Length: 131
Image 1 (cartoon, rainbow, N blue to C red):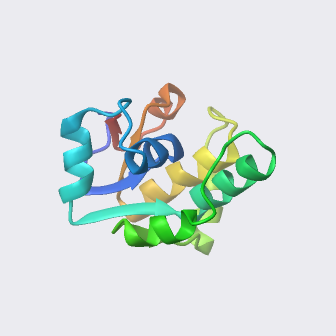
Image 2: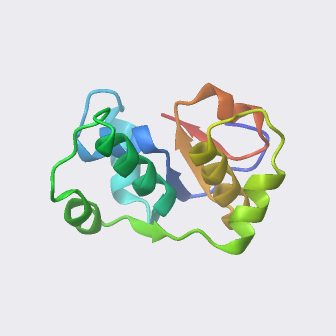
């Protein structure tokens, strides 16, 4: 956990979303259960955008029904708002990945706990739950 206070409201990083949807061994059973039972779990549209780009580039294989699976999973859709974009642009350049910077900005703005295994994200004062 980082310096920011953790909340029961979760924002899933891209790799965490993919591991959770696949019920992969990368996530502990406790974390999978927490994601399954939290009242507020979100996926950013930036994550869907990143997955789409990686899929189109042949770096990631997703089923054609990916959006349907995502909608049926019970997670909430987190749109990108003006405030998120402004916050992402104002973050220190500690992490250069624009998708991760957007997730950090959204977590900060919406007071969400970012569920991730990305060590670079820990450089920011954002609530993190280690995946």
